[in-house]
Length: 220
Image (cartoon, rainbow, N blue to C red; front, side, top):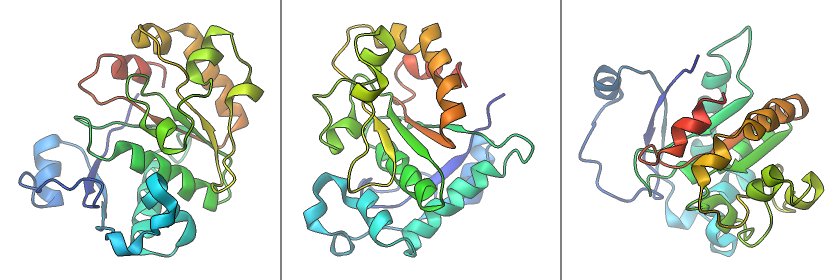
């Protein structure tokens, strides 16, 4: 069973004019799912320019008591409390279309979970547009594709960035059949195995407009 939540996203990673939903209540009534939190806008002067593409994720690490970090904690706590008997250990971050900020949210949730003392793994599951891998300069490393195909081991694919408190499994090299990769039984087995090793697994998924998002969801 899957539980879906709506997030009101108002940071500068999504700079387009918000001309759709104006209130959380409007979003909940229309979409039929609860709103977890409203993330405040992070202005450019609040982000250390030296962090480059890590921007807002680095902001969470450097300023864990900021309003934005508090909003991310509210999201993480709300999801974990959605099932007290069996708190979810694997979370998917999905957007409607590219460019809405799902990769930034995935990295922020990973940082927030690690700050809470959790052992966190961030997986780049967007094999066509691996934003998380590129953001952490891991685009040329072996990753999920190689791990599932058996051409690379865990030690060769898992990365613990020195400036981040969590582990990353990058997407790996380009594949012409991303749907087959994420729909495989090896993917399901890997997630079951890793959920015993990590307290929390965050998957940066493709937008809903891409077919292999639903294949990933079937494994949760």
